[in-house]
Length: 415
Image (cartoon, rainbow, N blue to C red; front, side, top):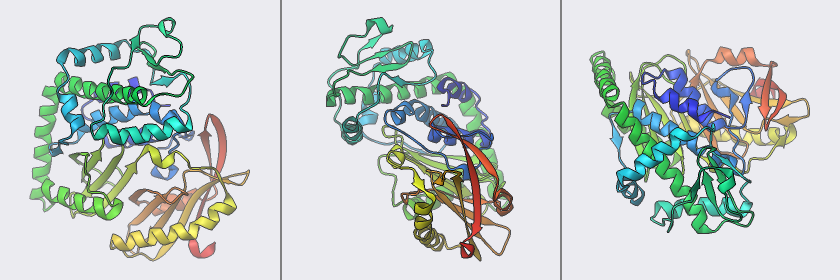
């Protein structure tokens, strides 16, 4: 599990490298499954969130949003919502109190005294929507300084341990709203604190961004506004979303997160409550999509293990989806390959399958789907990398156990 304190420390390095940006995005999204080979390539396709586990990850996701605020500007479309109004009306004393609490926390991330029940998980997701619409808790979650101060059958938060103690009974809607409100307020306070402490560095980086963008345009590249307009259109084409209720940020990067070395505008939309995020890298040279990814805790809640036989039965259907997507992107290709992981026990890696489209030129494109049909990523890839992987073993850590997974990369006509 990623150490949230390490994430906070990483935020303090304003000049974030693209490799770190990719690593942070993947680590926030992974939480449980981890490659033991030390590779952060997109083909690993890690994302498992379980029960209370996906709530534990909200702190890390929030830090990513804070980092995005730093590394992605100056285009920043603030969301005019009841939640934002609630946050901006917080007394300064409350913000400072939250920051002081964070400084005293010695845990790596939020923990919970027990997992959420299925009913609580379902109500949590429903209450997230209601919270965004203006349904706020009547009280604040009680905070205590030690486990000994926890009262039986009462919800509370032990500050030094960063632990939510949940009563053994079912949580009430009010208590769930208190947890949601606590997380949202804390994340807001962290962002405010960072922006205040690093105002000079942020301003300096903004000037550097302007110079990089000016140089790019002078060399025939597209402007930031053009990139944003393209990304807004692609957001709807790809995900069917217009980014309503989300905060948009943009930053110029000298290379795309896809790792193919193309300068780009990195644009992301994030929801500060649900932590759902869309990422799109637009080529700063010609406006094409270099990389895109969506993260949403709900997508991976109920993705079961499947057998190789079940996986092979889904591959053709998912291939059709991938080919339709390539048509939507208006990209022609010559061959389609499939990439996935399988264990010696005949189990397909739960996070899905990637289709690699080989073109007549130097480029290739990869589209990753979960086995339940949700598209996770699209990006330009190095075709030769996949050719070398076929048959190799990856050691994956799945729910705390190391599992050897064989990499399969085959031309679809060979299946």
